[in-house]
View 1 (cartoon, rainbow, N blue to C red):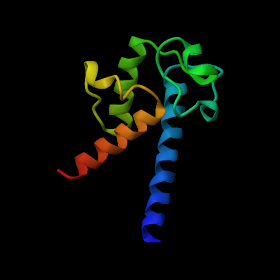
View 2 (cartoon, rainbow, N blue to C red):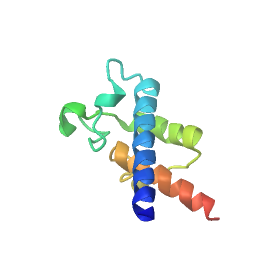
View 3 (cartoon, one colour):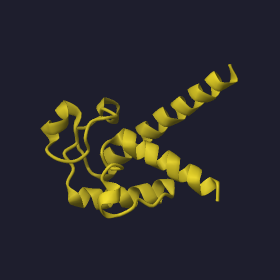
View 4 (cartoon, rainbow, N blue to C red):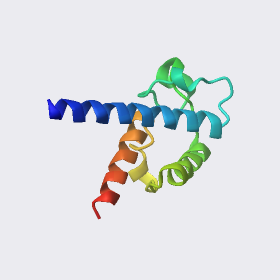
Amino acid sequence: MVGDAAANRTSMLRTDLKYEIKKLLVSELNLAGRDPATLDDDAPLFGESGAGGPNGLGLDSLDALQVAMLMEERFGVRVPEGDEARPIFRSVSSLAEFVEFARGARGKR
């Protein structure tokens, strides 16, 4: 039972974090007309907007730099550069997982 409560709390925190990331992306990247609530957590962030279905964002390399800065400013985590960053930038879900991991790693130092 205690494990279930902890898992539910973690799931709820991750859901809140994903929504916060979506709001941040929509507002800071000027994604006019996009509602954070309609963005798919697992839709690709980059490439053509149709590539991830109707909820993909279609961001480009300049957006990647801005997203990296946003993650550092808002969540206090530094996104690595180059190929190491590709899986982190895959989707809102992968960004949220990275933020949680980086915060946890920082707390264990």
